[in-house]
Length: 356
Image (cartoon, rainbow, N blue to C red; front, side, top):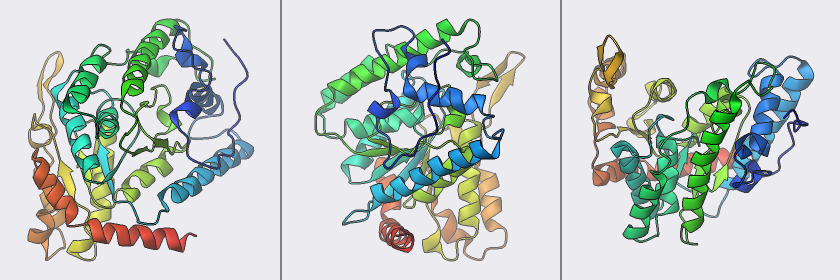
């Protein structure tokens, strides 16, 4: 299944799920590897991934990503600036996990209160956020049924990371991984199609750096980048009213400390973007446990290190640490975000006007 790979394109707006899944047939077991989205990923791999093989390739990727950045600015330009709240978390979180349900419930709650949620657009905790936003105005029974139905295909198959060779060709034995990804994606599309017409809006900022995993089908718009470094900067920079951290791994940790760097240099307390560590299991407040087989109880205790970092060189540590919260209480989360709404909208308006 070689096929002609798409070029990098010159988008003039953000993608929607129909754009990404162009060529995808839910009735085809191997549909996952036949979509435009996956074709773009193959192009990215064949051209050298994050280290493009030629200047021509580098320039084509750069133009695409610059156009997406411009489209994102256009998307955010409205009569009243939206209040963006980021939700970061692991891609491997099962749709059956209690933490997935909790993130979906929080996403629904925050969307109902007028916040525009932004994630990395992948599976796991990221998808849960968009599910909550999609069903923000559905009744409780429809939302609960959506989570049950999604649980019928709880996780992506193992082996997706090895589905392509380094040249962008389909690897031997790719079929099983592709079929599993298709089943996972089909279940999401089924639930999305059953959602009420009045759906909450949400924004995904994914990347082809992780293109072996399908983007969640629940976001309203997708600012998809080739260069992951630009995408990561966009994620943190756009989440101006606060960032919620669900349980995660290396990617979530990178985002935590990108946020730490930004907040470390906050001139005033009002400039500090709230950091909210959200997980019913207490993932961010305990150390992982291990035995000879590996991790038996996941966890990454970040409390002490964050306190030490923010105490270093600051005189307003007590006030700053009030904006670093470990909680699962929705009203506490909303109250903390509310302290930053006016400032976040002002900053976004200034950024949009400056770059107009």
